[in-house]
Structures are given as structure tokens and as C-alpha cells.
Amino acid sequence: MFTGLIEEIGTIKQLRPFGNGLEIAVSARKVTEDFQTGDSISINGVCHTVTSFTKESFNVIAVVETIKKTTIGRLKLNEKVNLERSLTPDRRLGGHFVLGHVDATGKILNIKKLSGSYLVDITYPKEFGKYIINVGAIAVDGISLTIARSDDLSLTVSVIPHSWNETNLSVRSAGSEVNLEFDVLGKYVAKILNKDEGTGITEQWLKLNGY
Image (cartoon, rainbow, N blue to C red; front, top):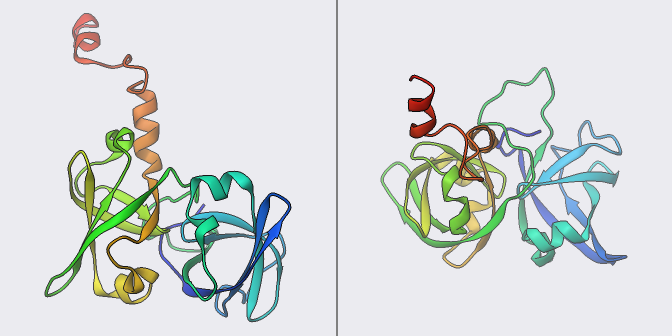
């Protein structure tokens, strides 16, 4: 589990086939300080397992499903990536609960710089609209962000200067593809209400049960 608060911007140093997957070497210094083999690390919002590491880099293996469902398979050498170690009991929980299990990818439509923030418009698959609420949370490339507004085609996130400067958003532009993970709490609520099945707690159900 992660928080969506990026700890470091890493750099892709090596990409090579590994069976049907991909072995990835990432240059980093901060996140490697207390690494152990087998630790979880979020790379652009995608949970990976550390297979080896040094003080200045670490390796992970991306499996076929990860490559299919995320942007990981389209990484390039020297590309900047967001890194976050998994949450530990002694860390404060900022951001929101992020699992590192990407739901879908989207594309940046527009970036607007304001006096004290940035607004970023991002497309998303329509079927995930049920998890989107204004001022709700979403992870974009692993970054915990607040949804400012949305419609049936896109959502807009508000980004403070600190998050902009300390993540790879600062090198993104219109057309950039990003990983999206919708708020896990929203998913549980939708499941409890059975919205996916069109049943569950509805106005009719409440009336029938005396509410």
C-alpha cells in the first residue's frame, strides 16, 4: 500500500526483455536507503517488487499483465519516473490509500498554469466515471491528486507547485499517457451498493424497507 506522496524522481537506466515481461533498472538514491530484496516500490503508480539493488539503483521485473494494462511497457531510457516506497506503520498517512494497482490509462489533454497551481485535464475510460467525484481523490502516475471537476470524457486535477516540481508532472505535456488508479474507498462503496450490478441499496429498496 502507498500514499500517493512521491518520494523521489528516478531515471530509467536499462530496459531489457525478461521472458514475456520486462526487466527495468531505475537510477535512484533516496528510496534505496533502506531497501531489502522483495520490498514493494511504486513506479509511476504501478506496484513492483525489488529484485536487486545498489545504493544508486534498483531492478524490478514487470510481468505481461502489467505491461498490457499500464504505461510501463512504453517506458524509454532516461525517462523520469515517480517513485514511492510502500507504507510502513511508523509513517504519517498523507495523500490517500493507493494500492499500486492501475485501473486504466489516460492522456493529458491540456495543462493550464494558474497563479498558485496547475490544472491538468486528463481523459479516462467512461466506465470508471462512477468512481469520480468532485474534490475526490485519484492517483495519476502514482501521485495523490484532487479532482477539481469532471465530465463524461475527462477529469481535471488541481496540482500545487510542490507536487508539480517534485514529480514527473513537470516534464509532462499534452498527449502524455498516464496511469490512473481510482480511489479504492470509492470502489468499495460502489461494491457495497452493488452499483456494478444495478441492484443493492436504491431509492426503491429504501422505500420497501421503511426508510
